[in-house]
Amino acid sequence: MKFGIKVCLLVCLVGFLRAQDFVISYAMQVHNGIATNQSFGITRALKKYQGLEYRCEIPVDEPKLDSKQELFLLDILLKTYQNAVLDCLYKSEVRIESSGFNANSQNQNRATLRIITPLNAYLEGGLLVLEVYEKERK
Image 1: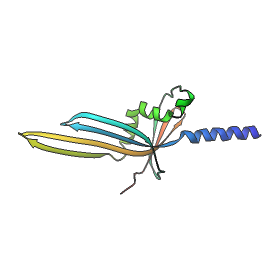
Image 2 (image 1 turned 180 degrees about the vertical axis):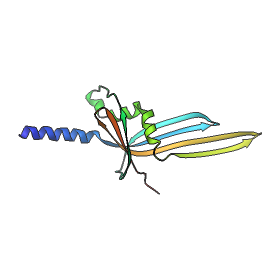
Image 3 (image 1 turned 30 degrees about the vertical axis):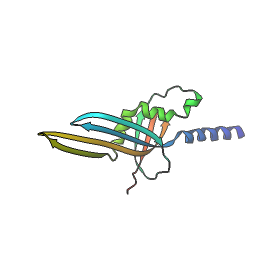
Image 4 (image 1 turned 135 degrees about the vertical axis):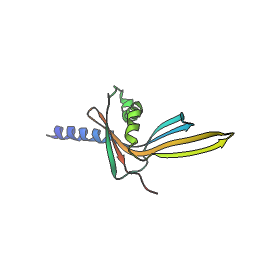
């Protein structure tokens, strides 16, 4: 009986260890309608967020990793499936900064699209589950 309890406890702890809070940031710069630069960043959340806004499930193929890399499995999956992660995050708040000027009868436009989203990520079967938190209002 004690062995069964230990196994159950171990399985539960491994499940909890795999769920992690992240802050995903994405920026894309556009100059005259042409994307010129983009960046995708993943950081561990430094504080706890409250209030689930929505949830996305992304089908993934879990890579085979050694024990040292296993700690970074979610980081690896978030980067590997970056486009699907961004599709999920577009449902959230997206900030667009734009500027333009006219010189010598030619318009010059610059725009930056920014997403900064806190979320909880974990694996459930063959799915990468993203639970996106509500953004804090300033």
